[in-house]
Image (cartoon, rainbow, N blue to C red; front, side):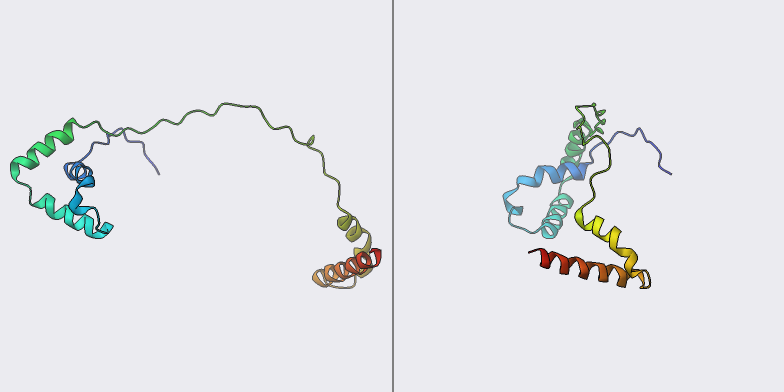
Length: 126
């Protein structure tokens, strides 16, 4: 079961450090995994005062907020063909009229036989 939480989505010190290191030229050409390792190494090498300053900036940074969904407005609805049934195709009419001829066969073979008959008649029309 999901529960709604009203916690503010504050940014952490390491997350802020990673954002700041995004444009670091020393990390630019590295693949993602190596870049993460290098950033972690740089973070561990920070002095205590630098970490405290980073923590202050992280607290001062605006927290992420969830975007509220915008209610959908009812626009112009598409007008379709009146909601009635569409006209049956020639093939459908052909199947309806000829399926009873093959009632002794199983369904799959019956449809195969009707399809062959349709192809024969189509070739004769040409």
